[in-house]
Length: 304
Image (cartoon, rainbow, N blue to C red; front, side, top):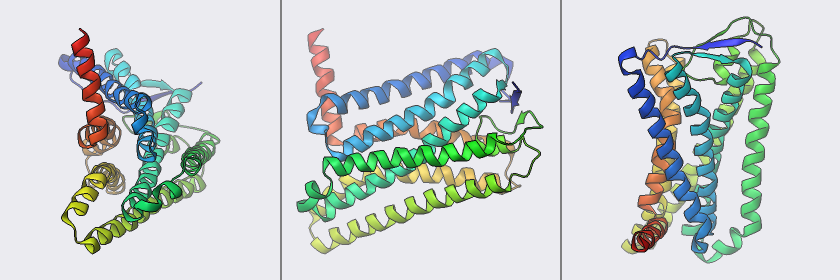
C-alpha cells in the first residue's frame, strides 16, 4: 500500500509539544460542547422540534469533521511525521467532504424550517410533520453519501504516480493530483458538486430569508420583527460564517498570488472554526437550549 507524505506543518521543534497540547484541548472542547448540545436535545422533550432535530444532525456533521481532522493532526504533530497511508488519506478525505456537504445541506433545510415557522406559523405543524422531517433528514444523508461516494470512487479508480499531498490534510483535490492519468471527468464532477450544493444552498437560504424579511416588514410590528430576528439570526450567522470560510478556501486555490501559508490557513479554518463556534452560538443564542443547560448545571451543582 502506498505511503503518502502530506505538506509540512512548519512547526518549530521548540513549540511542538505546546501545539500538540493545544490541539488535544481544542478537540476535547469540541467533543464536550457538542456532547452537551446533543444530550440536551435528546433528554429534553421540549426540544424534540424540527429545528432542534436538524441542529442535532448539524452537530453530528461537525463531530465528523473534527474527528476526521484532529486525531490525525495531533498524531503527526507529536510524531513529527507527515506520512499517511493511501487508504487512511482517502478515508480522511471522505469524512471531511461528508462534513462539508452535509453541513451546507442541513443548514439549507434549517432555513426552510425557519421560513415556515415565521411566514406560515399556523401551518407549521402540518408542513413540518415528523414524517416530512424524517424524509428531509434521510434525503440529506442519502444525497451526501451518494455524491461524495461517487466522487471518491472516481478518484481512487485512477492509478497514482506521486506520493506528495499538497495540503495539510487529505481531500479530493489533493488526491487527484497524485495521478498522472486524465482526471478531467473527476474534476468536472467535483466542480458540478460544488456548483450544485453551493448554488442550491445560497439560493434557498437567500429566498427564505427574503421572504422572512418581507413578512416581518409587512406586519409592521416591532415585537414580531424582534422575534423573527432572534429565531433566524443564529442560523444566519452560522450559515454565513461557513460560507465565508468556504469562499476564502475556494478563492485561495484558484488564485496563484495567494501564498501557500494563507491557503493552508483558509483550508484549516473551514474545519476548525465551525465545529468550535456552532455549539457556542446555538447554545448561547438559543433561549431554550441555554435555559436547559443552565438548569441541568444548577441541579448538578446543588447535588454536590
